[in-house]
Image 1 (cartoon, one colour):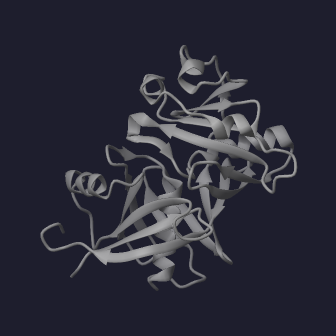
Image 2: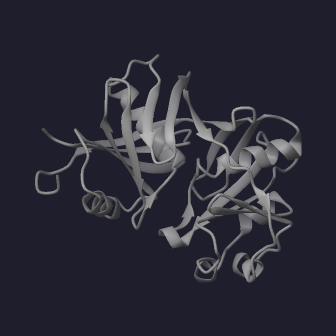
Length: 270
């Protein structure tokens, strides 16, 4: 049977926006070298591999062109979108995924998809040596958020205009770098961000759902509201709704998705 391979723009208001993810729908597990090779071939920030474990649970794994990652928001959003769009799940049925970060659940909310992810509380730290020079901007706040480093800058304009030295940035001790600032007055979102991860083969990720596991509690604490809207100010750009639920230690992350193309692997590749 052919192996479906679909490209979906996640956290996108329309095609060619947000963050593209490839979703490969399998009948069962495949070996890691094959999955890594296909992710390198697709050359997107993430390729998701999805197969059923039961009638109500799918196994989900995510690979960049260089490594497997433990949590990915936009490729989870894309995977849920595919299951509903293809009729494999009913519109009112939750998408449940067994992952390296536990069981993740996504539900439909009108045109939006809401995902239930673990929180990552940023812990203040000293900015690493060389960070300001690598970024080209001086941090106001630095904090560790799991494997990532969260950096607050003074203004939205500073975040948008960053042109980092990626070679220097790769030497910073962090999986990825989340750079953020409050939104400009009058904006229809609450904060902006960008995400750099040259060590993962992603100089800049277009829209990073997993980063909002840290951005949500960080800005909720600053702004005194649980429900916020973020805008990731990459070239493609994307809007992300978040709701921090500290009593559950979870973050609700919502976005929209659109399918760009559908295909299947050729027999030689599958």
